[in-house]
Length: 157
Image (cartoon, helix red, strand yellow):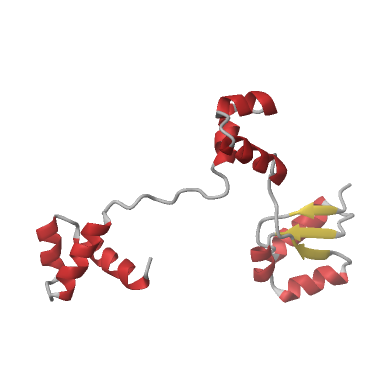
């Protein structure tokens, strides 16, 4: 019988009773931190009195397959001029993995649809007092995008 389980559903009275029926030797329940925070203190106390501890677990999921040293090795070999195919053959990993590890430190974000010149034009027209609706029709840009570009510009992002 199991004395320790990982549970990722909210702990209600009925679920606790089901767990106790299913695992009579239960001593420890691990759960995600967000779920632990939402669990009633009364339930936690009751479980504690029964000798069962509830513990939030930070990281759950599949562990990384490649260590930092291997990632650095791939990046060094790329900088030295080796092709991804050569690296894959030398290190015994798939070509797809080499491309994945190649981009791991800094992944590109979403490409901006509008050029900096277009953003400047929107800003300039806005500063002249041109309404957003008119800016949208003049530059053939959706009005929501005009507001978004103006907001993005003010936040510095």
